[in-house]
Image (cartoon, rainbow, N blue to C red; front, side, top):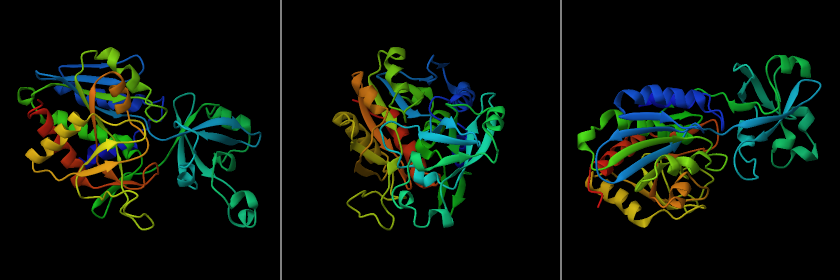
Length: 346
């Protein structure tokens, strides 16, 4: 699993530019899919096989990113965040990190996300509060707008932080666990489950632009109009660190998958949530319960009339370059899904 997680998380795939992730999944999934296709908006969809109620497992391909909004005459790029909502809370976590910026010719250009630092920051009122898009910029190490543009950077160029996925003690840390770890779980399930074992007609769905407002998931129902059930895979906010009270996020690494009943966008289908819980109990798989803020692709499945549950591996430091998961939690997600799709779905 580590090699799959590492490959997926290190791929460049900001919202709206998920092509590299889609190409990897299409190649990886093709050998064991009965049918595989990429939709006009870029979702990757695969029919794995089986008979019974139609069930989709879904995760998104895009990652947290920035976009260039303008380039100064001196060669610095001003930026905005690339997620839904008005907040730029994650920009602080990227400050001082290297970023990969996609040029017009498809080449990656390296930059650092910078702001006033050291002596220039001392005593400066604008730098004593929250870090936001207005107080930071990308520095390419170039000296003019012309040089930056000749490197292929334009208004609209997306940028993602550069981070290597690596083992850290018992855990795995890197960028884009949100939601590439979900894609890794789906991939492992598809590789190891046999069509004749399934108690459902199983589909895998990898969506685009979740971070910008579950955009890709909104069109899934037109591709799979007879879908009965869905399980959305996401990352689960983990509060087992200093400075966070247990009641804020009572979830811990290494204690099993999260089965979430509600978040800020939806209450997941109770009957489908119970199916996940029953599958965990049948398989003797420890799990954790959670409610959280934010939202997931599951919202659009619910809007399409599909009974939907939400499962997630616990994750520390979400929306940062050091998102952290426990390999045992990730593997337990695979096993829980196997118990679900091969078990009683009545």
